Image 1 (cartoon, rainbow, N blue to C red):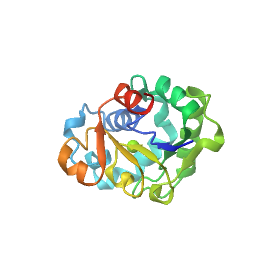
Image 2: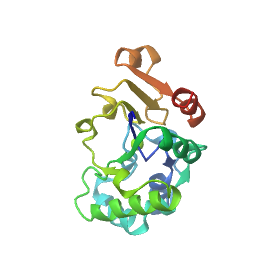
Image 3: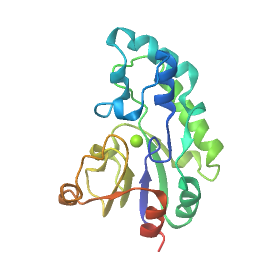
Image 4: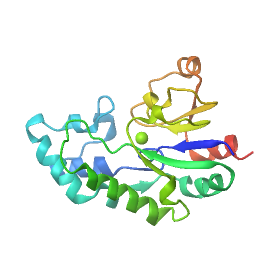
Length: 186
Ligand SMILES: [Mg+2]
């Protein structure tokens, strides 16, 4: 069986972190206001500690939406591949209470994908340490390393990468889960 690792945030579900930024600031930012990868750049540095405390208390997974077809396709992939959900729990410059984020991720996965065993969950930001035949992630840095297939899931922060630049790194862009289904479940 081929080993497949799938990212969680902005690949399986999305929107929780951003919703809580708007709640915290009482603002109406849209994703086009975010410059770069880190949404917290919208918050003044002096308020970041307070925001992270609010974020972790609120459980951002209470505010996420499932990306269309993700769960149905993953359930099918789970029969054909040695499958792991691999998610980072590190938030840069947040130093407290990150264990709560692991708990919230783990609870959400169990509730929404009960077919995923605890032994299929990996929580690390060092994803390059894990060998996998196939990787799916919205962050290019998580796609480096030896894999037969590296799929970049389209997200607000990676649309500027051109297909030919990605091809040089052996990376293929996918826009949705139906495309993944066609590629991996032929
Ligand atoms: Mg992600």
